[in-house]
Length: 289
Ligand code: PMP
Image 1 (cartoon, protein in one colour):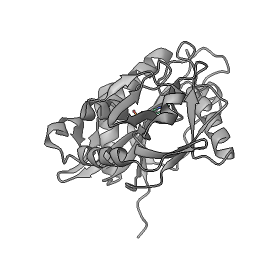
Image 2 (image 1 turned 180 degrees about the vertical axis):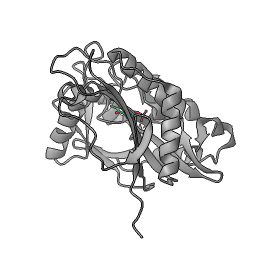
Image 3 (image 1 turned 90 degrees about the vertical axis):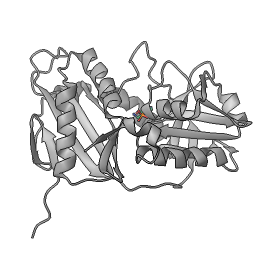
C-alpha cells in the first residue's frame, strides 16, 4: 500500500501537498505580499493540542490587515485543525500562509486573488540540542517605521541576508543590533539574558512581538527592557526563544563564550512541560486537535 500523501489546506479544501498551485504572476512571489505564522502542536496526555493558536492567528490577522488581505480567524482555525487531523500529527509544526495570487505586474493588490494555505510537518523534539553560536552581523533589522515587525513574507528577506552573513562566518544565527548598540533580536527568535539570577527579556521596537517571549515573561515574571550588546556580553547566560527554537541556549556571541546555561535549562524544561499540558495552570494555552 502507498503511504498517504501529506495533505495541505488550500482555499477551502484539503489537497495533496505536491499538487501545483501558484501561478507565475503571483503577487506575493514578486513583491512579498503575504503573511504567515509558525505554530506548533504537541502531543499531550489528551492527544495533540495546538499551543497558543488564537495569539498566533491574531498576529497573522494584524499582518493581513496591513495589506488589505481578507483573513478570517475562525476559518483559519478550522483549516489548521483539519490539516492536523488529515495528517495524523502529534508533534507538528504548522505553517498557515495567506497571500495575494494571480493578477498583473502592478504593485496594487486590487485585482489579485487572495489565497490561504495551511501546511504541517511532523517535528522532532530536540531538548538539550546544540547551543547556538551567534554572529553580530552587518545587517540591521528592518526598522519598525519602515516595516512593522509582523510575519509579512517580504520582511524575511532581511532575516535571510543576516542569517547567510552569520553562517558564512561560521555562526549558527545572526544577532541584530541597532545603530545605538542595543540588542534587537535574532533572525527568527527573541533574546533573553540572565545576570546574577535575574531574567531579562530584550525589548526593542523593531523586534517581533514573540509569543514564546510572552509565554516566558508570564512563566517567570522576568523584566522586559532595552538591553545593550555590551550588557549581553556581560551576562551570565543568553538564550533565544521562538516557536520553532523553543528555549535555545546560546554558547557564544562572536568571540565571547558562555560557560553554561543552568537557568536557561530550567526554563527549557518548564517550557517543555507547559506546551505539553503538564502544568495545570497553563492548560488554557492549548487547543485540542
Ligand atoms: N523574531 C522573529 C523575526 C521571528 O520570525 C519569530 C518567529 N515568529 C520570533 C521572533 C519568535 O516569535 P514566536 O515566539 O511568536 O514564534
